[in-house]
Length: 229
Image (tube, helix red, strand yellow):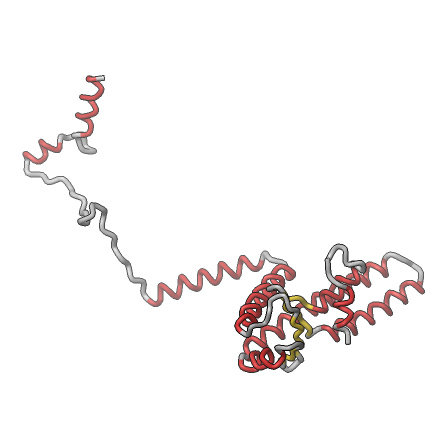
């Protein structure tokens, strides 16, 4: 063990070139020293980026986010956008003292005007009137959810039509499709905020068609039907 220890001491005392540091010092050669802060740690160098560099980095990040979104389906992007708006509206309603468990029904028309139901109707409508950007986002999210419902209705019609060669059944499927189209149009601007979640009446309606008992979705058939008025 003594021999190994002495060997280790000799190795540590030499630099990368195999020369003794003491012998280098004797020849007047100074070994590089590491600059340390008073606390004994290496000092950090702060680099201030130019505006152009910051712009390039921001654009690269935006491109990366856009590329990531390309891999997402329409439903995934719509769900994220709907959930984000639901959270935003829940926070806004909380500031108006609207209980989160209260189902607040909203209706936005083609001009972006928002009407509400319930005891806080005046406060909520004023909030949207004072914040046009929020009303615009509600209008767009409601419209996209209505598109989703319309596509689900079309898919259902296509499936029903292909499943039979009976002309009467095909005609009935076409009639039902048109009835659904009218109902989806009626519900297209109707959204509900409850317990931090934003729901589309048009999507709920199509879920009700696909799941009449409500066992799978857990949504009330009567709740959707009430919004057909």
